[in-house]
Image (cartoon, rainbow, N blue to C red; front, side):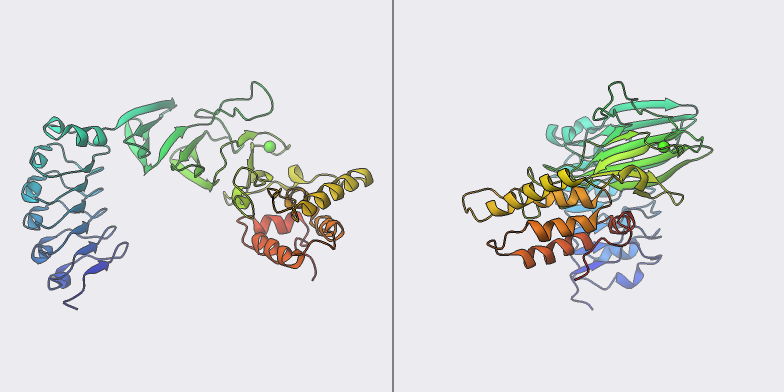
Length: 399
Ligand SMILES: [Ca+2]
């Protein structure tokens, strides 16, 4: 395939790149996360513009010295320490050297670099590079916390790039790159004043082993939050991560007699569905960590008693008048499914479907379409299994 221009072999078991040496038209080559040591066969790929060699045990990059068309080069998590070979790459704009042993950056001083990433490096001669590149490359220690033998450090780079590391007795035992990381959680959305701030070392799981919560924000207007839960026992171990979408108002609290804290969060998977972000419902969930370290619905904390007659009448009326308003073209749609979700997320899906059936005025079209769409949303919900269980297998109406 001598005319191939792009090839992605990342995350394979590639050891030997000799078979690629004849693909002379290649412009974009991705080889990250393999077992490559020798890059000499790549020296003939003179048309390469993008080359990714991240996460390979490469020590010597001198064969790359004549790849003058390279504009993007990824060498992070390799074993390189010397970048003299990059000196003549006169088109190089993007260079990633994170977590290598590189110290001397002087070979880069005459390159047209726009972006340079040097996370975790103890660099020399950064001041030889243009001011703008220096500023973007700069990584600062944002926060640090210690517990027992463990220390966690959060570093932030330019804009929303950063990383955190966990050290045990001064040795790095865990490392993760991503967006903006935060040690622990301040629990400021907890309804009780003076709710504990979770910093480092608290027993969140109730298993008698210290924990660590790291929260990540990946950037963007309303997105995205991740919660990482670690155990800091004999070893530092990531127990679980949880994608929370747009939700940043979650908090940890103890709602059950079972040991350990529960996590109160909001299901943001309904955001933007038939409504603007601001008016989209986000039903509350109480999550507990199960034996497989997965966040699941804490049914006993989510179940609520069935609404009594008066409450039910009020719900019917609210849903009915909101649906009626849909007929008014100048009216912003108020999500009438808010009430339905509240019933479903408290174990009363059957009642929710009954309410919808009774409340939909015969003068308003679109009922069947809504029902189909609503079912599709439920079937795609990340907590579908939990919703089924919470509603005793009666989540969907029998059509
Ligand atoms: Ca509990």
